[in-house]
Image 1 (tube, rainbow, N blue to C red):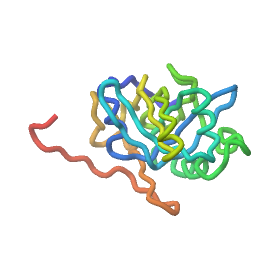
Image 2: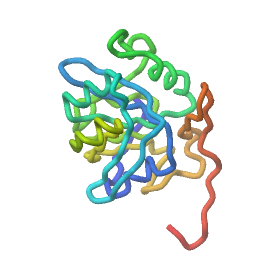
Image 3: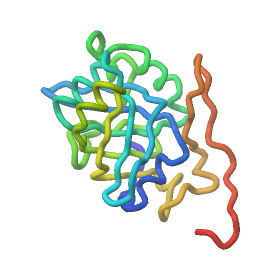
Image 4: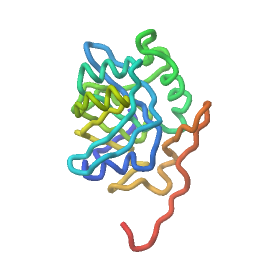
Length: 189
């Protein structure tokens, strides 16, 4: 497993506020699954909340609705191929963990797994909003535990060099870009 340290929940929104692609992992009824999502974001600070789009046709959605839990995993360039692979296959038809070599460990608070090799993990409990789930495929979650690779994120901030590991952003058609070079405005923390 990638090295990980806890992130203060009050700062957990910083793991997503730059718009990375995520892998959404889920578990219910003895089954686990993972899918990719380009549309996720932080929503609130206290308690911390997130939003993610999970299409009606996905096995992940079935497991999230059954369990009321999910994890947002923030992958790196090293996981770009896997991110595409798990986003392009159905967990109803294939065990994505076996087929694509997806390493994982159990969540600390939720049953959904944490995906190895990522730079951040947000364990979430579903905030049921059936109307927006049905109408817009939008799922809200309260962040109940957050983790980051200490080489990439420390003291509530992404490190400028990020330990050589940067989050990725899906554009379309198999194209990604990595988070760019960091810079700071003096006097702001």
